[in-house]
Length: 207
Image (cartoon, rainbow, N blue to C red):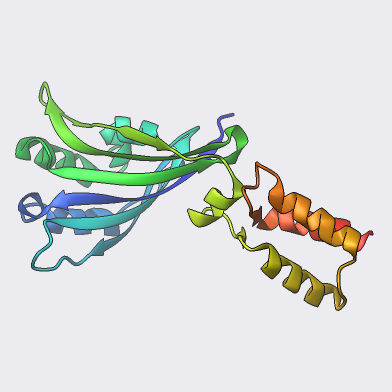
């Protein structure tokens, strides 16, 4: 069974392209059926007078990683269940290169996947394609928290204060050393994710 990644991103459609697709895209989002792997469309941000594109927010679930959904635009717009998705593809294809851009961050803890991807649309042999470039993030708790994939603590002092409040006592010297070692661990990157913090609290409870 494949691991499922958790992505969050934005699709930008040029204002010139948007003028001919706005109603279709709005209907597409309202009628959208969420696939097991693929995209959950959220919000079309209104654009200002000086903006060059319209921004549509989305979350995604990838099979191992979400970039597979970008590589196959029929998956990205889920044409199998929503014919409006194919209308969007056809329109962007007719419009030509650079009709749309995207960016997303992707997280899959099983294989320690954490990266950002971005690119623009182009047409090749009559087919709509998305180019893709990558920016890898170091797989640390700090980056995972900063990218809003997990809740947790970025500050050791804050964690100690909340833990002492939880126990209604000051932590011992040995307990403080344990906390410090956890925050210093290279894979934590100076932060603790929520489930790691819970495990540490349970361990301190037994001291």
